[in-house]
Length: 256
Image (cartoon, rainbow, N blue to C red):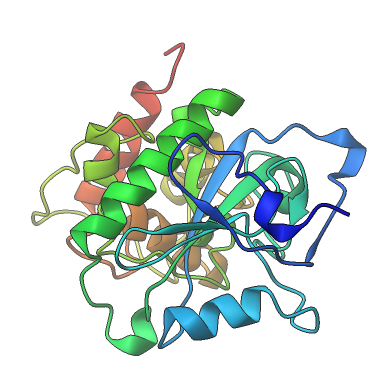
């Protein structure tokens, strides 16, 4: 067995190995092609690290980024860390097998959703860029936990600076369309226009069924979309700004 002091991180960004036992084989020898960002949602980074390395917790991630920018690698990138739980994206339903997970030490919504420290975001950007380059992860598959599990999760939250990461070469992004008055689709609406919106969300990758009914599941998906791409107003209602931002993102996909 290799001593802990001899373990080397996979990333080229400065990091320290702090092994977690919570991982397994990637199913079907899947090569990771997704990067998934989370917040820990716990009061302290120490508490989060303890949980991510506790063999009885059943959770882990490949990396943990602390508030001061220090990076800990908990699970080798080639292994299947247990960070995503039940989720789906663009036909993938075993998110853990196709992704590399980064936990960001942050108290989350329950902790008041404070701003992410600059040093931490700089480290997340550098780490994410390194991972994406080494594994050839497409920008549109750099996602938040809420994107793949909209009915359960809301991290990394609406104050996570996705636009800043994109400016540093990480992820898919367009400037959100301005919020303004106009037609709004919301829970209870139904018809061809709602189904067309569902089809656009599904085309981008969101786990949503077609059917033309704006139900609770669709409200969760629209909320997740706003958490990531239209953060000014997160209300689960598909207003003009939300729809126009989604259309712009689809136009900006590679090959469009």
